[in-house]
Length: 359
Length: 110
Image 1: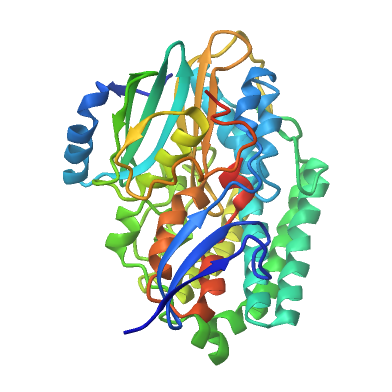
Image 2: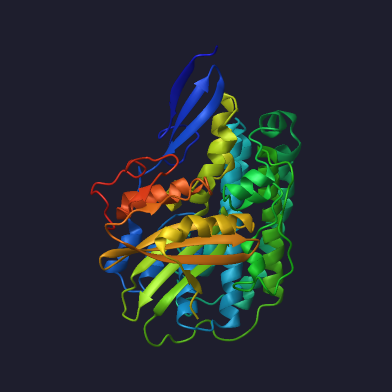
């Protein structure tokens, strides 16, 4: 009979950009159980509703995470706009969609770089991050920021983007697409990469659905669920289909994210082509009163924003449920039965964002 | 335009969760909000793109049953509600007993 032992994984580990701890119960080299533990960087940002008014909370929401910052500001703003019955101008919706897709591009490229680094392809890692810089440059040109953008506001957006800049974006997106076609080949075709990803950490569609997984982690198991299809922002006006894969393994998750980058290029081009003229915001009158549950599709998956307001300038509650938080039970399931050497790659394949998770 | 909530008594949550599970809904999230002498709990369930929100008011001193026997993934949300708000939840499958979050103050959102 094999002897069981417990190996602590994290909170500091070369593959983890942020701290999470797992107690891995091992039988020889196989993981039989994994118990997650978080709380190393909990900041209690949701508690700031006591001190910041509902407009200032947009910036607090953005500061939940340095990668999904735009999405957090967007999700919170949309929740408050629903409570206050604010009809955001069409141009603002299109700009929000373009920035959301740029976020998806830079988030997925960041993840691809980390994955390449994890399996030892360092020049590929640098290529991914070099390409990501292009997306950050577009953010800087259009919002003034590369990490925290402060471009979202209740009732619209703070900055317009000129037609010349949109034309420039079009060209940059096309060039990025050409470069990504070269960069993605090792991820999808290299035999060494495939040996680390194929058949590793398989999650069946039934498990993924029952465990409440979200985003590419869910869709790689064959579940067609992409919150963008609800049509928030300008997603109802653009043509796209959710990217789905059926194998449910680490390779399928990688494939999904790569295809989503190409899809994001396409959505941005459609938005630029159809960009309506007009205002970018509407005046906000009164105070929010009521509660709303808003869901958006962040790069890592479905994020939930619950806002409860009381008619004063300070809201009662802002609750953010991030995709990584929802993916933790799925991660624990995929780790069962894997080899110890596969644990770092499996943790990476949910694209963990611990800052988001802990808020 | 506010979200429509289904108001439920806390002692009915197991029955309601079972009904939703049999109807094919998955758990999206659970959260707590502090109200005077009580907690307002919101449980969100989803099926495809449809969403159902259950709202309950739980007196501060009262316990609520865990739904981890129906939705195993609820353990992360229930431990969070316990650690940050002090919501008393019985029979959580994988109970961290207050150690999921490492907070300087016990139940800081209470």
